[in-house]
Image (cartoon, rainbow, N blue to C red; front, side):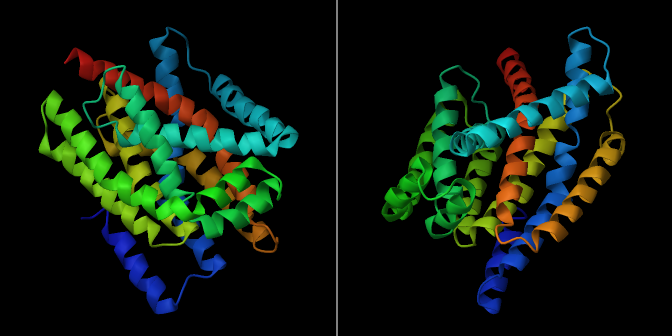
Length: 306
């Protein structure tokens, strides 16, 4: 219920305001990024440090920045060369990363379960992003222009968005229940699937930006915090409190906050303010998703061994 309450309140608030303005949506997105989005991403350097130490290498902040900023610069160059393929790559990376995260607490650790993750990530992408086709068409035109395969796909998909959600919702619940039942159902783990499905239903009732912000801040980021905490604590006895996890990342959090504030004031005067935002999110998703995937892989190996 705590996961669902913010989305319910936002739905009521939107009805009272007769819709959210673009400025209000950007403010809500900024709040989501500031509360959990940026802080969970600011822990990437701790993951990198743990991976370096596990590989027998001495941690170097300079090496981390080269890795992180290097991947972002390479992806930015790709955006400049081919925006359409860059956006498709972002959507694929995001869907895989979200599915990785959403299933991190479930006992789905066989190689065949990777197919479940791929399929669920695709469905999640269709529901969370392309499930708002009237809005996504506008954003796609701003980002990649009018002659693009993603734009044509969104136009083709528009009549089917409701059917994909309502057919997929009971289908995923039944399939995951059967999969978990076969491995030994734990009610708490299956309960998380039900909560996620209800949250996605609520996100569909909100505008694209707000629905994405709710999923990203309320579900994805909090689940990521849990995975990072378990990963660091299992590999390093120094991490025994939340303070030990959060305080070292404050410089990265403050730097990201400063950049977010600058972006908000700069983009408020731009006619296509969301274009640089989506591109910026894609740039940081690439290194973050790669680091987090290693966290999920190690968690899966420990579940297999137990």
